Image (cartoon, rainbow, N blue to C red; front, side, top):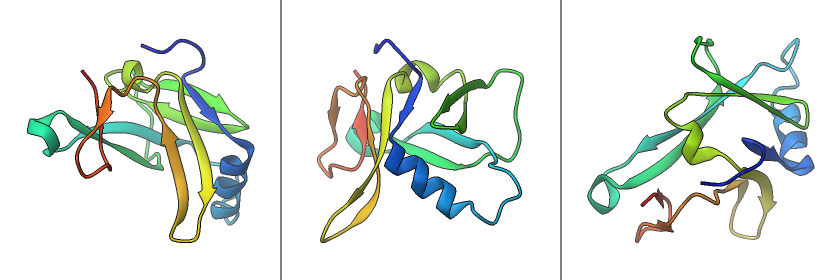
Length: 115
């Protein structure tokens, strides 16, 4: 598994998050988790990112570029070292997650595989 910070957010990604949340009184934490998919016999994982609706005692807290992430302990080892960027392209724009713990991608290219 990767070493270093739990989450690394680029400046461009942080700017996009702040812009999206500009109507909030203060920046709420985001929840970052892995969810299993049915790809590759259930070995595929997708990333779930959204506003956190609460915090549990078990949640790990990561902060990068002034943005706080809450991560459940089951997802944390597979997310450690993940880099979140915001990319702009001709066909699509959006957040790109680069996970050093992923061992591959499923055939559709949308879901990461772990071991």
